[in-house]
Each structure stands twice: as structure tokens, then as C-alpha cells.
Image 1 (spheres, helix red, strand yellow):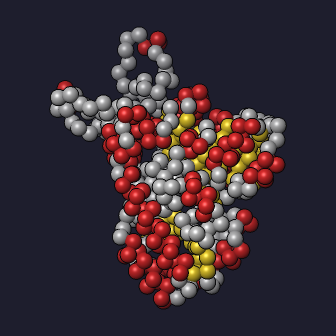
Image 2 (cartoon, helix red, strand yellow; image 1 turned 90 degrees about the vertical axis):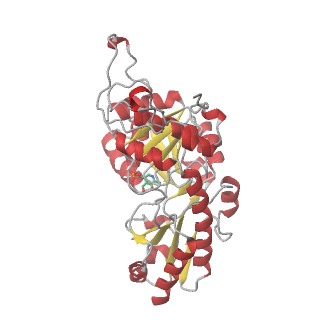
Image 3 (tube, protein in one colour; image 1 turned 90 degrees about the horizontal axis):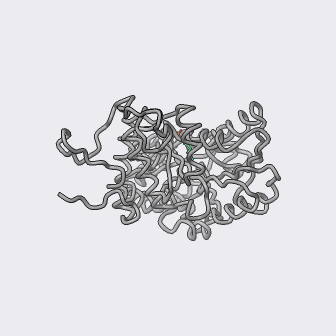
Length: 399
Ligand SMILES: Cc1ncc(COP(=O)(O)O)c(C=O)c1O
């Protein structure tokens, strides 16, 4: 039977690429299975002229720390979905962050980084890199373009931000930041974990490097961790060699297989999540016991216009909010929820909520109301939003 051109990402729509790219039909003794099996092999047979091999070629199967069938299939699919030349996958999203910072920077370099973002950013850029490697970072409000321009130094090598900054959904203008970074001769890196392809593709807006925690929406089922870095070959080759092969945070074939399977339904899940999250944000905003809500789909969000321009397919699946009251009120509310689970992470099939305390959330950067109450970060799952609203409403009723 002649197969359609499954690997030709350019000829496929987003939904079809999520199903077909990277899924190899196995021939001969596999009975032509129509799903790529999990290939649990540390090593692959080498040709007899092994010394002539390119040991770091992305498609060269040698040893699982370099790549394997499942990791390679996932890399191809993610590159197709993100519109990237190349992708390297890692054991976790944090390993992908390390990969970017450790391979693009050297002693004496300077970084301009969002002052709101996933908290490992602070641990790496404020703790580890300056003390051990002499790499300085200025943390700025990356939604304030003048502040970003002012933070640039002659030694600035990297500008880094998140499209929607974790945990409060501050929106960054990616096109404008790309222009500032490139004027300074710096690499522009974007963590797009909150806005997977389907909602946003940073490379089309000037980013040089995209990072993802695959643990979140791309896997989408809360059962595997992974990370990815995407960009052109020139930037990705050292990331593959120095970070994946030599630092060794390789993704396991099983997790690569799970994430590949999860990604099939990414387009469908994102449509559900965007619509459902909007509904829940509107419910929360209208509730008299809610003190504050940050969701870019709400007209009250200070950057709603920018978000509407930049994210026409969905404003994301997380809401930051807090109740009138104190820290204790937030904890009491979380304890009363029956369907929404109190757990970290986001983008899973089940809705999650986490109460971030001031210390966790680098409160200094946040709205005053969060400083006294902490932040509730809600992540919409695949449930019917009416059930989630009923759960939230019932818990609010008891407060
Ligand atoms: C925006 C963002 N980037 C990176 C990470 C790290 O990913 P992982 O937990 O897969 O290491 C997270 C985790 O919450 C995140 O929210």
C-alpha cells in the first residue's frame, strides 16, 4: 500500500502533523505495526566503518544518550509543530533550560531575563551562573520595552522571557523583544511552555530559541516529564552535543513514546482548554469573594489587547487569582475543592491548583493583593468547565 507523504511536515496541516510526523510504521518482522513501538535499546548496531560516522548527527542511531527511535520521532514531530529546523529533547523542562544557558553563555556574558517566570530561572541565573561562572543577569519587567532596552549591555549575549509569564500571565510582546535583542546582537530565547504550538509559535515572531517543558501541555496527561529546545541547526548543534550528549539529561524512550502519543491530541486539547479557561476566568472575575484575577482573555487584563493580537487562538490554560482574605483563606478554599486537585504542574488532563506562597513566588514583582494572600494558580484540564465551575462555586460558598 502506498502511504501518504507522512514525514513531509510542510505539506501537512497542524492537526495532521500532530498525528503523522515522527510516527514510523515498522516493516518486515514487526508485521507493519502502525504505531512506532517503544525501542528500549541503549545501543544500536553500528556499520563496520563506524569511525567514519558523524557521531552527533540528529538522525544517527548509535547510543540512547545521542538519540533513539522514539526521541528522534518526537523531535521531528515537535519541530514540525513549532515550525523549527531542529529540535533536541531532554529528560525535563529544567534540563532544556540548563541546555540553553550552559551552551549559549560563557564567563563575562550578560543576560537580560524576565523578572517574572518559572522559579528555576532565578536559581540558575541569580544563584549558580554568577557565583560559579561569572555570568551576570539583569532581571527586568520584559513587558516594559524601555526597561529592557536600558538593561542591555555591550556584553549582553542572551535575552530570555516567557510568552505568558508563570505564574501571573504577564504578556510579553515577542516581536518587539526580538527586535531589541537582535539590535544588541543577542540571542532571543523564549520559554513557550504556557503557549504550545496551536496557541503561539515564537520562531515566527523573531525568537531564535524556543524552550518547552513537555511535562505540561504537549504530553498533556500528567504521566511523563520532558523538555525540548527548538531553533535552527547552527544554534541547536552545540545544544545537542554539549547539553544532550555530554551533560546527559537524555529523554527515556518510554517517556518519548508517551509524550509523542500525548501530542497527537494537542490541537484538540488546546481548543477545549482555551474555551473552558475563558469561561472559568469570567466566572471567577464576577464572583464577589474573588479579590483579583489575571487571565489575558479578560478585557480587564492590563495587556488584553496585546494578548488578543499575539494569541488569536487562545489565551492559555492557567488563571492566577486570589480570594478576599488572607493566606489562610486561600488554603481553606483549596482544601474545599473536590474535583480540582491541589498539585503543582499545569496542562494536564485533570484540572490542578497550587497555592504559591510569597516566598515561592518572588512576591516583590507582583500585584499588592498577591503579596498578602499568595497566588492561586489554576490550570484547566479536559473536564467539562461546568463541573469545574460548580466545584469552585461550592468551595467559595463555604468560605
Ligand atoms: C514555564 C516553565 N518552564 C519550565 C518548567 C520546568 O519544566 P519541568 O518541570 O518539566 O522540568 C516549568 C515547570 O513548571 C514551567 O512552568
